[in-house]
Length: 87
Image (cartoon, one colour):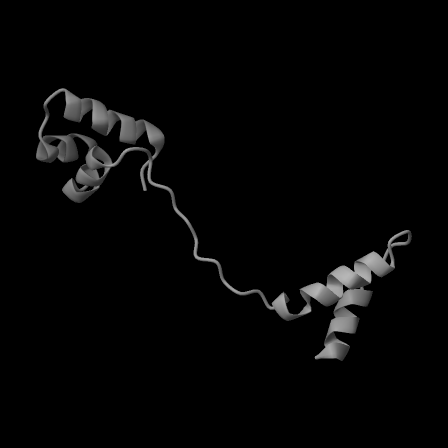
């Protein structure tokens, strides 16, 4: 993925009538990259696929445990120890 300045530069050169091959040669990027930025509206965004967490099964327990100890605090060593006891 390119930085925003390079994407803008690609679009400016394209509007000036430069060919995709010339732009790619000038900026030292592939022609496919130039095509992608010329055709696209905004900057491409990298979006990571959501993955399950190891704690998904225990999130409700953790929330209840924090709520139960509301005025007090829970020592940092307690939740991992309790979760290991749960399995």
